[in-house]
Image (cartoon, rainbow, N blue to C red; front, side, top):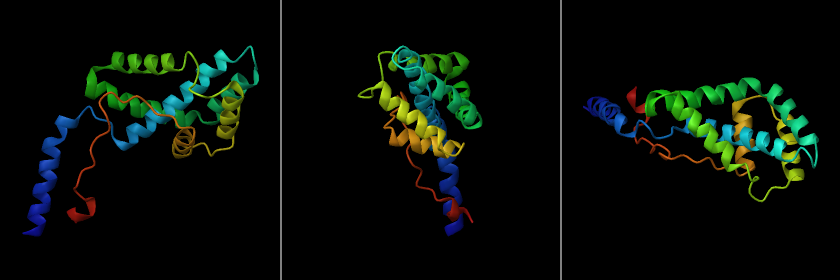
Amino acid sequence: MKKAMTVAGAVLALVSTPVNAACWTQSEVAAAKVRDFDTMLMVSGLRCRFQSAALLTTYNAMVVRHRAALTEANMRLKGHFVPAIGGANALDRYITRVANRYGAGAEDLSCDSLQSIAEAAMNEPPTLAALTALAERAAVRPDLPEGACPALPLQIAALR
């Protein structure tokens, strides 16, 4: 009986998923944080290039070092936008919106502070988890229009 109720709960959770299809899963939120972090450094590197060329140089080296993790984050974002919201155009609009947010500068961060953040990224392992943690320490807050998905009460272990 308990197993039947657990299975029924799992089915109910799956049936109700389309209602939340556009919400952001935990892995998509992590990808959005990394994308914001990357974009913040890229746009700031361009904005700060006359004050200090070091930020853009460090950013470019960071991209090379973390290419696989950045690609993984972008693929997760693509997985969110393309099926859930209607295509690559939505992803392009999202990425443009992120870049525009940093066009006037990163909130309360000077070019020197951003240089320190880029240097910290160079010292992190080249993994998505490491970049996500660094983005969180840098207080990156991505704009998630649909919001994060609610946590499902169903425990995977209960399905056994």
